[in-house]
Length: 156
Ligand code: CMP
Image 1 (cartoon, helix red, strand yellow):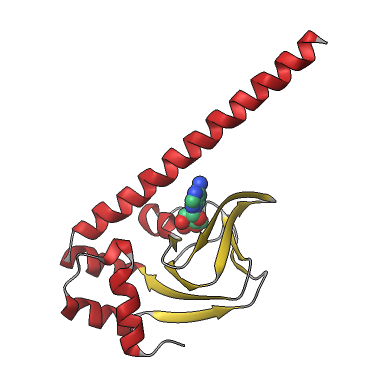
Image 2 (cartoon, rainbow, N blue to C red; image 1 turned 135 degrees about the vertical axis):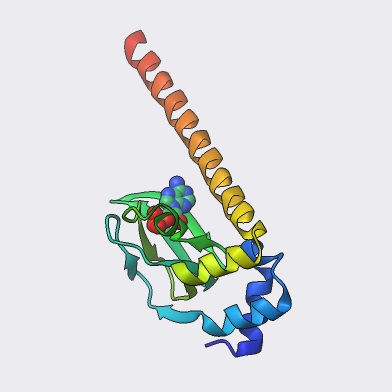
């Protein structure tokens, strides 16, 4: 468990909150819930309704669709923001790969934070853009691999 002061120091360093005023950060830090999960614990599953955004304080999680890993995230990373923004079910499951502490923010708290400091929405958009780029990179390398495999098979 983090003390209120440690919580404040931690969320001040989380990239999406960097522009928030200290006064608001103090309020936000004290309103967030802190959750602890054991290793191999599924925090939520793809298809579930999503009401919170999570920030990894310590430990590591994997974001996955079935058995396929999409990405691994560690301290300072956020996840679960998509369902909060589009009100659709969770797009992937998230499972801890080691013991993990997270802070959570509900939709109302997120909207309040964005109204207070609209740059937060820009920061989240930046994080989403980065994820789409990474995904496109992976799709490209899968396609290249697939072409290579096809070329090997047709040359046999
Ligand atoms: P959400 O859809 O609410 O729940 C699953 C979360 O996993 C999603 O929000 C994102 O935070 C995260 N996520 C989904 N797909 C990816 C991806 N391709 N790369 C990184 N994170 C992802």
